[in-house]
Each structure stands twice: as structure tokens, then as C-alpha cells.
Length: 164
Image (cartoon, rainbow, N blue to C red):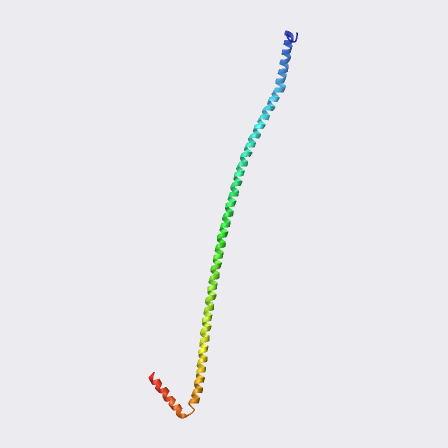
């Protein structure tokens, strides 16, 4: 029964040894353990705050990336629209220039045709006049072989001239 009811001496020595162990633990073990636990707690808090900062920066970068992509898409659409407008203007200008050139060519061709037509008509008139003169010459030579016929013809021409 000694273990169930210890004596005072045993209790004293147990209490003394426990206090010494407790003092040694507090002096040499608990301080470094608590210090190490605080350092560990601080490093975990720093890691968590660094992770939060990294998460915030990632969110900012993601937002900036989205903005850059949206700006790039808008710029691409703007460039495509400008290119379409320029293409339409170039095509319209080319069509207008081609139409003007065609009109000039057609007008030039009409003027050339008119000039050639007038030239041909004059030439035909000259040829017709020469032919008429030749025919008239031959007719007159045949008709006016005799002197009496010549005088009758001259009188007729003179009478007609007075009438006009």
C-alpha cells in the first residue's frame, strides 16, 4: 500500500524532482519550442499573406490580360473596318476612273468617227462634183458640137441667169 498512500518523504522528493524537471524543461526546452512555434506561426502567416498577395496580383494580371485582349480585339475590328472602307473607296475610285477613261475613249472615238465621216462626205462630194463636171463636159461636147447649138445654149444660160 505504500504506492497508494505514499509517504511524505517520497512526495517531497517526487515534487522536488518534478519541479527540477519542470524548471529544466521550461529553461531549456519550452522556450526554444515556443520560440520555434512562434517562428513557424510567423512563417505560415507570411506565407499565407504572400499567397494572398500573389492571388491578388494574379487577379490583377488576369484582369489586365482580359483588358489587353479586349483592346486587341477592338483594334483588330477597327483595322478591319478601316481596311474595308479603304477597299471600298479604292474600288469606287477605280470604277469612277475607269468610267471616266471609257467615256473619254468613247468621246474620242465619236469625234474621230464624225471627223472621218465629214472627211468621207467631202471626198464623195468632190468626187461627185468631178464626176458631174466630166459627165457635163461629155454631154456638152456631144450636144454642142455644132455652132448653132452652142449659141442656143449660151442664150438659155444667160436668160436663166437674169431670172435668178
